[in-house]
Length: 195
Image (tube, rainbow, N blue to C red):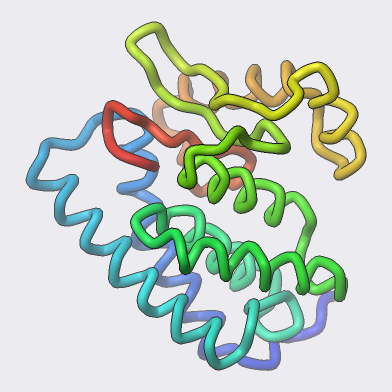
């Protein structure tokens, strides 16, 4: 039995925001948005990022103790989709790492967010969690030292890169499954904007 979050109202707000956005994240991953809808959804990501910025300023990372497992996951999803605000993503990476060190958030969330921030900065990712859609299909974003990637992933409890790619392709092929809300892997798409 899990302990109730210290701030259930904040948890509900974060979960609501991420829930409302999950549909457009999934559609953006699949490149199924027209330009007008994409603009509306990007506006929603900007609004959500503003909410997360205030939460981080008031509470540091909203971890399991403060907002519960679902609230923490929702905050992570919002941070992942704040590609337009590198300063916010960078602060979120740092605060999420502190929460991981305090056993208040899962390390896999930090790994995904760190990779996302590295890619946004134009650097190779560390953990191999980020992909892009290309005309040839889904491809991993550049990775630092690819030969040791699976060793680094194993140290965090992440599956081998090949297994993660297979799982991602299965999720993207599933028409009714919400890939963005699954949290396992995120796909920045140069075709549809960052997802």
